[in-house]
Figure 1 (cartoon, rainbow, N blue to C red):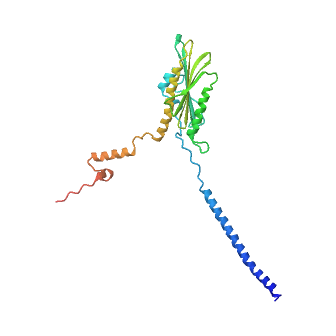
Figure 2: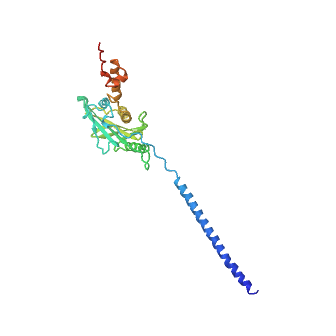
Figure 3: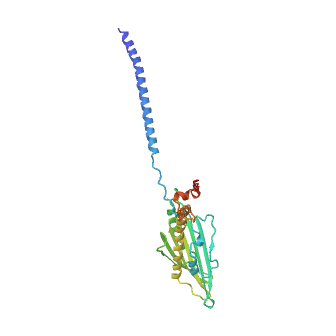
Length: 288
């Protein structure tokens, strides 16, 4: 009996080992499954992360012809005796993004002196970009930049800036005086924004050979008038692309004409549509 007790203890200890191993294995499998489930749950959360909202689409995708953006009558009034009545277009690598046109002329009044006038209009358009922002936002930044640039004109005197009403979504007119070529010039620059397009228009004038310098009021009035027309031209260009003029001689018109001919000859609509109905064979006369 003394010898059998230790032997029995060793047998029981050995029998317990497989049970422990099984328990460890189950625990390991359970932990692995938990990690997989956690991973899949984390992956599912990442896939449902909301994406950035798309930027607002640009309102305008083209620019007007700058030299045709201002009415010829307005050019005649603002720049009498213009050297080129149709204007001189500025150089551009992309006319849909940037364009400009200018006019200048000297109205010689003999002993009463001469009046010089110069007019320039420029357009800059911005596309919407997911990384840079909407076209309108980018145009607003350019608008502010152009107003600041006009205020900082080299040699300018008596600089003033104020809002210009009724021109685009926002507009500012900057006025100043400038002496050059021995004469005093009156300047007005109108910077306006419509949607994703910025319009910058500058109008100036001077008197030569004893003629008076034009008043700032008259220069501002002319600049604002021309700027309104330039801004309107941007919208007109967009409208023309959306609703092109109807073509003459459309298919509908041809169908109506064909139907009219059929009813005029006493035939029905179905007769006029059938080329055979106009030449039906006459019944043969019965022999007596």
